[in-house]
Length: 192
Image (cartoon, rainbow, N blue to C red; front, side, top):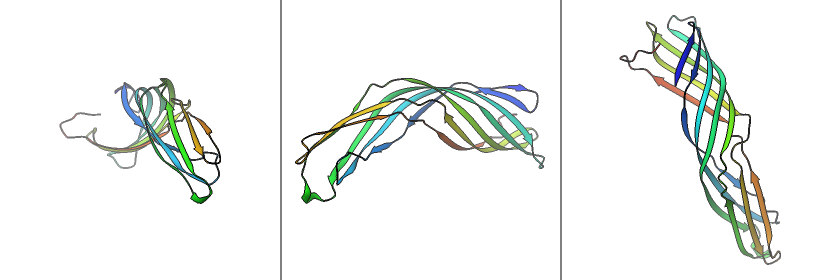
């Protein structure tokens, strides 16, 4: 990351970040009465990111305290590397009424790479000593304007009453990120 300064108060931060992202979700509704259970999946992907963040630093009442406001965009390239699935159940809530013969759920691993652009908003509280940062903590929100990598799920359930009930699902998430950070700057570092 690097900063380009517009005077004392404004600067533009940019660079290249690489994140390893993961999230989990479950499928519950199998469209069969008295059936319960879930099929859980955990997609994992690598995301190179280029942020363009405008920072405004305002001095607070205390001489050594500043508030930094951030607003900008983050351009992400999401590269799926794996989809981990774990099927739990399904089972019948009243087992005497029916018999589960077979069930199977698969992920169609297309591993489609997607380009997304996110809005970035954040605020940090900074302490300085003789114009040198000593510590910082803050909170930020990264909200995507476009859906991320899509996933398709196919499966079937066979029971004594229903020979085969096909199941299809399409999932394309918006990956919103809320982050809290704390940074301590050692004395030997020179950071403005």
